[in-house]
Image 1 (cartoon, helix red, strand yellow):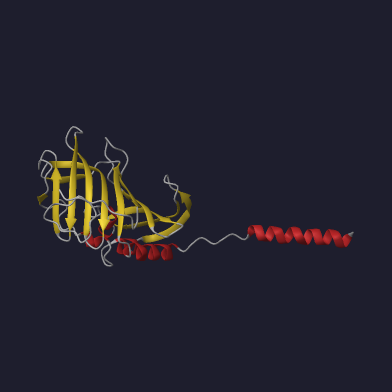
Image 2: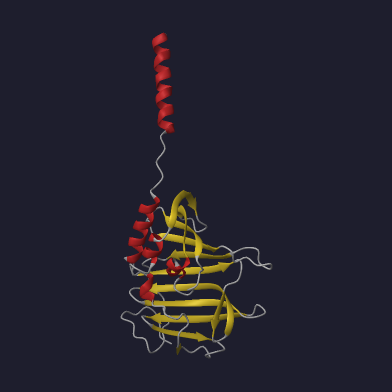
Length: 252
């Protein structure tokens, strides 16, 4: 009987030991390094950039407007088209389409250009190739994270299971995460990074600009960037002046 009780006790101890053995959390530096490497190898991806909290003003030919949302399509090596939602004074919405190929930029607006593409800059100095360039793009932005820590495994609204990391960074170092549409994020920003646990691609970035709160808007300027449709078939509507190597949409 004593021997049987001893065996039971030993079995319970072994089971308890197995239950206490948990999988160690992934190394955050290895995660962002691999994620940056993978995104540089893609042929295309989409990004939705959404701004909440204190307004972010940009100066355009339509005047000073508030940036609210952009849906951008990137195609390697140097093409990006985006539909940008802005708010004019009084909260009147304005939609601007932007097309970039290399250093060339075009934009169109229903009122300002009669919905015709014009060859002019919307985001000065932006080149889509910078999105995936080693020294300026996603990879560089991820490498620039300061105090990177792993928080947990979470599920995004899309159903994607993602590793959640947190860090700070210099605003200038993470501008590529906003598709080059915003180029002044201030000195230091807080960054949450979500990396798809299944394929290690970046899935979401949340960038918070501390100190931007106002009396009217107590929440700081916050940017949520979702990356999806990686290597999917792109849909572009390029200006007539642009010649695409492969048919990805119709010209206008």
